[in-house]
Length: 505
Ligand code: HEC
Ligand code: HEC
Ligand code: HEC
Ligand code: HEC
Ligand code: HEC
Ligand code: HEC
Ligand code: HEC
Ligand code: HEC
Image 1 (cartoon, rainbow, N blue to C red):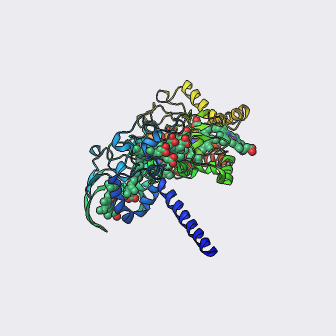
Image 2: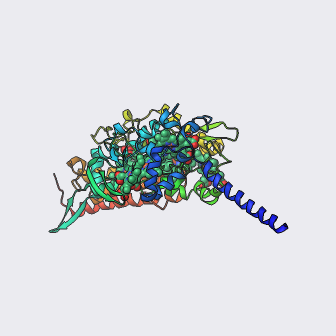
Image 3: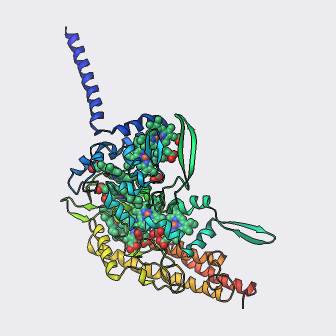
């Protein structure tokens, strides 16, 4: 009797346990639409990784209706309302890949559905309009146009991506090609994705037609999409988890912000902030919305300083979220070739200086003010950035920090000017061929050193001042390198004078 009862109890416990596991697995999902169910039927076999990624996302767990019920400070969808057909079910394969079908030249018939592969910011805008509008005003959204439509930068693309040939005792240069460009500059800046044909292919599930996409795959920030929209939300919110946690971690930004020209991640990783993040972030909550300073995190990541909405323990907002990543940037510390006030427009390819170059500064350093923000706007943005710091630092600390940044901008710009004077002298004496000769200004040895002076060493020094990581402001591509490079440019000028007969006059 006694043992029987005991067995019963054990059995009951097992059933209850199983039941609760089963149940907790089930409560998660609001309803999945019939269309999405059909996609999953095949795709859990064809692309199981995509289906399981999606099942980890909030899109699988929360329907737009549930999302809209939240308090504004907790809400993750910025639409006022979502149309009936989309509101009640979770956001699944069909909801995204069939969105705005008529506006997608890349739409195609796929097992009874009309779908497109390149889900674009315009599609996300159905539920996230604020993020999409803000992102469009960001230099990132125009990263393709600003690079590819600027004749001055075209020389840089060519010099970097083209091939040289040493033939019959001389160097010959061959320009770049589209596959290399997609793999080089455009992997970060974004490619031009177009429909270039249709392919019929034998799949695991029979013969199917697919439109062929040019320059695909790509998740560059300024990607040109087949539907005419620009940008790829997936560059920071990788599909199909579309996670806020991933976007808030610095490794996401490191994908593109790490090289010697753009060393933000490198300086961050050796800054005190970066050290704290790596050392103790196991205790942080990267998923919380609102994101409470002190409670959810205690040192800033890239997102904290540049984009996130931050609140204090009383729920007071210290600084509002923005996908316009320049809302807190008075300066463009990325020198072109000098650091300058931030440009007004995200597409910088229309900027022209007095010398006819598409640079936001003159070769002598003065900003081309017409295209750049006013002092008043700079002050406003500075206040926004300092509001971030004020969550953890006091007035004197913050002001001391930014006084150093002002100085760093001044001294690095000065060093760039000296390098420019040396190069201009070489051009004037016909020892190199550049702007005065109407030739590529960034291909000869002394010209390449000039580029490194501002693109590597000026930038690295300023980035280190702005975001910590002293080494990158001193011996690792910093002030030491600036000095050494300048001296080498001067010595090279003397060498050219001594060895080379003048090319012209
Ligand atoms: C009958 C099975 C089946 C159904 C139903 C189905 N798919 Fe597919 N899908 C496939 C197969 C097979 C491929 C090819 C995979 C490959 O290229 O290796 C594919 C490819 C795709 C691609 C990639 C196309 C490209 O450009 O390479 C997308 C996007 C896609 N499916 C989305 C969907 C969506 C969204 C649904 C539901 C509306 C859906 N599929 C329904 C079987 C199916
Ligand atoms: C929130 C919108 C969204 C949802 C939901 C979604 N996708 Fe996607 N999907 C995208 C985006 C965006 C891309 C393109 C990624 C990029 O921009 O690089 C994509 C790309 C794809 C691709 C091509 C990727 C590759 O590696 O070849 C396939 C296949 C695909 N999705 C299938 C699915 C399936 C199956 C589901 C459901 C389980 C699904 N998607 C759910 C937005 C979505
Ligand atoms: C039909 C509506 C809809 C569409 C289209 C849509 N989303 Fe969402 N999105 C949602 C909902 C609902 C949530 C969850 C809201 C919540 O939990 O409060 C969400 C949440 C998010 C989050 C926050 C995730 C997190 O971990 O906190 C991100 C990021 C996101 N979406 C990005 C995208 C991107 C990028 C696209 C386009 C490729 C997209 N969404 C398309 C409805 C949509
Ligand atoms: C690893 C990613 C990556 C690659 C590859 C890349 N860039 Fe960039 N580029 C960036 C980032 C990040 C910025 C913005 C830097 C900043 O604001 O601090 C940028 C900005 C620029 C700008 C400034 C544009 C403007 O006016 O706003 C130019 C010019 C540029 N890059 C040229 C190039 C060229 C030329 C190539 C290829 C030879 C290239 N980039 C390759 C990441 C990249
Ligand atoms: C896929 C590559 C890529 C990723 C990922 C990326 N960026 Fe960028 N970012 C760029 C490029 C390219 C530019 C420069 C565009 C230009 O100047 O033309 C840029 C520019 C910027 C700017 C200057 C924006 C402006 O309007 O002045 C900031 C700030 C920035 N990125 C911060 C971040 C942060 C923070 C992250 C991570 C959350 C991040 N980026 C992730 C490629 C990327
Ligand atoms: C350069 C990186 C980057 C890109 C590109 C980007 N985001 Fe974000 N996104 C972020 C960061 C960082 C956060 C976290 C903001 C915070 O902590 O408040 C975020 C948060 C979000 C959220 C959650 C907002 C909330 O209320 O919790 C949504 C939704 C979202 N992004 C949508 C988009 C859409 C749509 C696009 C494409 C237009 C996009 N993002 C492109 C970095 C990016
Ligand atoms: C403590 C706050 C803070 C952190 C953390 C931080 N930044 Fe910055 N960032 C700044 C400041 C301040 C500036 C200079 C402001 C200006 O340009 O006016 C700056 C400038 C930049 C710029 C240059 C934009 C331009 O003007 O050309 C980029 C790009 C950037 N940061 C990206 C990042 C990335 C990526 C990370 C993480 C790896 C990061 N930042 C971490 C505060 C921060
Ligand atoms: C979430 C909290 C937090 C935010 C926000 C924050 N910091 Fe910090 N910061 C810290 C902590 C903690 C330290 C470590 C202080 C220490 O022990 O010396 C630190 C250190 C520093 C240091 C010292 C570096 C050194 O080498 O001595 C500087 C400078 C700094 N922060 C500037 C800023 C600026 C400027 C901002 C805003 C753009 C900012 N911080 C935003 C938490 C924060």
